[in-house]
Length: 294
Image 1: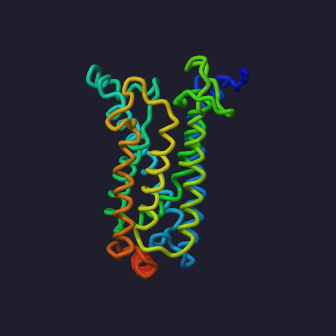
Image 2 (image 1 turned 45 degrees about the horizontal axis):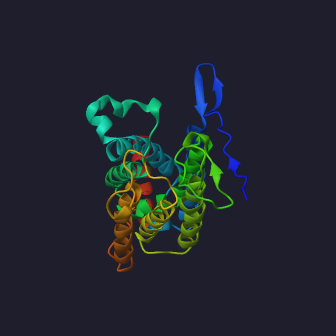
Image 3 (image 1 turned 90 degrees about the vertical axis):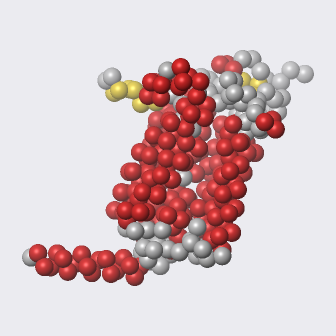
């Protein structure tokens, strides 16, 4: 019996246009992730001032907005550099300017993560915060953005899955007539909704500094390792050693580092720095300086 499979409708990649400006679905998904991170981060900041600080450090909404701006910028830059180096290195060697050819698309989460880590390192150093505590605060804010990005991949009909005959398979016309796993939606579920739910539950109670960040690395790495088995490997790379994809190989170190962070966190190696007491002292110092200038 021949089964009728759902055919991907090949949506217009442009969500809407304003004059010469085209707003694409994928860009819209980035904005959804950014808006959620801003909103949920404000909630976390408010809770931190009520004695429920994730990672042990307090935050104001202004401090979070400051980090969000620089972190998002670093994520975009790192994502592009990571994509070119990890997945299109030969194209970069042939034409180094390919790095700046954003019209062809291409972002790497692992590259974006490295960019965000650099931003966190610099922010923590400048602001006198614990790197791990900043990571704890940021970790629960990431998955929804990841999930939204995967939905954008599905809408664009890209990064499809491997051929299959499961009843829920989808035919992506750009990939040929074979029904395939909608791996973009699998990843949106595991890397997005489920990972957010896990981190939300875990961070609701007081945890040692570094534990939430460690769990994020483990959770994302495991989700990516699993869902990559349903995703079609990059055509120009194929499967690498041990029949693993590039995404899986890049995720293995994440899991290992996450386990290390979790072990060190529960041994009390990481300590918060910008606690409520430090914030109060800083506020009093600023108040005295303002009073002296009046």
